[in-house]
Length: 385
Image 1 (tube, rainbow, N blue to C red):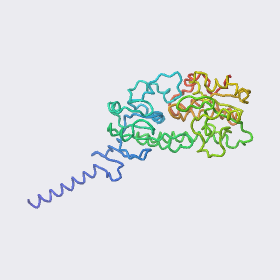
Image 2 (image 1 turned 45 degrees about the horizontal axis):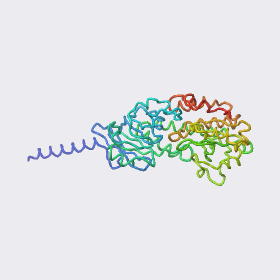
Image 3 (image 1 turned 90 degrees about the vertical axis):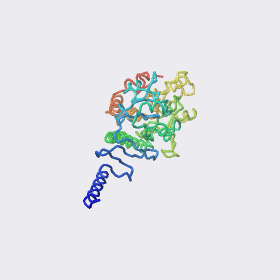
Image 4 (image 1 turned 135 degrees about the horizontal axis):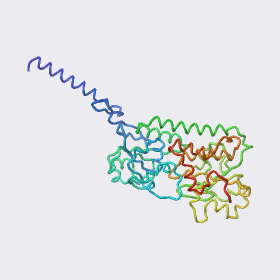
């Protein structure tokens, strides 16, 4: 081999090495891999379960598995990227307290990916070929690693969180979903929206002396189905946000230790507390056998002497536990509760209009009227017993 030929081969090899380096960013961090044109092909994110998941850099088609997962996609205004839904989206129900679905009835027409609460059908999902599967943490259904193995599609786990004590988990999930979808800006807008509204509720009520507060109780809270008057929450979020005097609140516990889901308490406790005002979560109307909270207040002689009943101080609020928490309805209920408990501080608020403003931001449609119609137009009204 001549010296010129040897030098030529060496230079060519060096050039090829440079081209290879230019066409591929380093994968040591595992965050980005690019193709020869410099465009990213994949990114690696950390999901709510602490799993490192490699997803396409551009995600066009997704499925959402588990309770509330599609709600978060709708909050990020990315619901048009779904290719299938679980079976709860295809049900015909006389009552429905899911604003995200009421704003998107087309969800009913999508192919099935499995049953609700995360009971996925890997074959159905695989046939739809989504780029990513979002999955809210659940105690049932496929393990995310197993689902990813069976389908070959990246599974991103989200911790649903809540709007009170697990708000950081809620916000983290919005940010993770936003990162995967390229909707980071919208995720931050949604987070700012909730922070601003919660701050507004607190600012209106934080200086009201305890001695001037009306004692309140909420019954009929839904949890894995409807319940009667004794189902309450000692940490009911709308009460927390407006600094209400919740008669069920246990002063011996921290807010985080309070009951955070609808849990039956003894009838004797309701009678002992004897609240001045009672709010009824209208999910209880699903009970048609005479055991709803309204039926109990009307017909159970034990409740005849309750101050709130005698004075006609019983009010309807929207259900918010409906295929997981509907955070927009929590805010809407909080403004109505505030209006009832502190009329002066909420003199400028029309609760129905406020609800529609909240829903329009979150799900792009004012659905309060449609949802309220399903609950016999009892939301945000004084109830006739």
